[in-house]
Length: 259
Image 1 (spheres, helix red, strand yellow):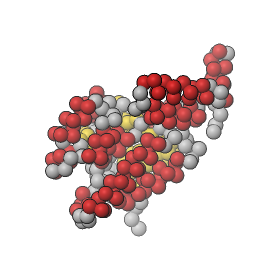
Image 2 (cartoon, one colour):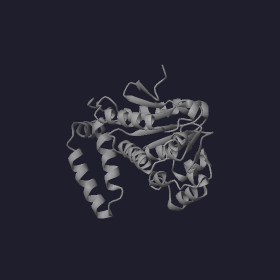
Image 3 (cartoon, helix red, strand yellow):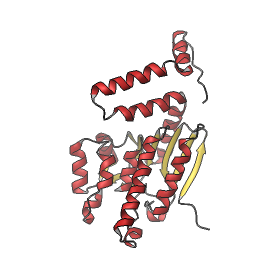
Image 4 (cartoon, helix red, strand yellow):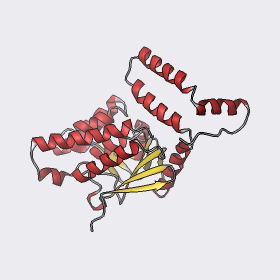
């Protein structure tokens, strides 16, 4: 029996989704896109999960869409459906209540780079490389450009998209595509430590904070402040906020609700 294209792992309050097509450099096949979509939908209502990690088996994070599979179905209607499903999966990652961390080794190219950019945080191994290289195949990376342009400055995005050049992990960190770079051998442990640190925070604050962050991001300044102010006024009445402030004033450690 063939192994599943997506592995589900759990470490306490941390859910790990592991891309599992190592021989194909974890290319995002139809099956893998659908598996990710289903897994993310399930996590959306999972109150036991505080943080989600997107990782990958083998030497690569993801080489993007499965070009061999796509060439076997050269039909515009199929392509539109594929990119629509993949785009909705990327949107669903952003819409997840839980913070999502990408654990990146090897290459993350085209839609693989898009997947990294669609995660809220990313940690890269020192040997990781990134590219939106469709232009080298005669095809502009249109869908990856959406996530990329929301992570890095415009001129960095243009250079990546219009040259197709690879950048190393340190350059990706300077551009803001990843949060930090660690030795390859320490990648999994570094992601585990980051995820555990976030998972230890109050669940209600994580959910509210992520939702607010993306809602205000592209609002005009005055609308963003109104939205943020209303959110804080509401959240200050939550039991965790009351406990956290009281604990600070009383110089003790807070005890968070476990919802």
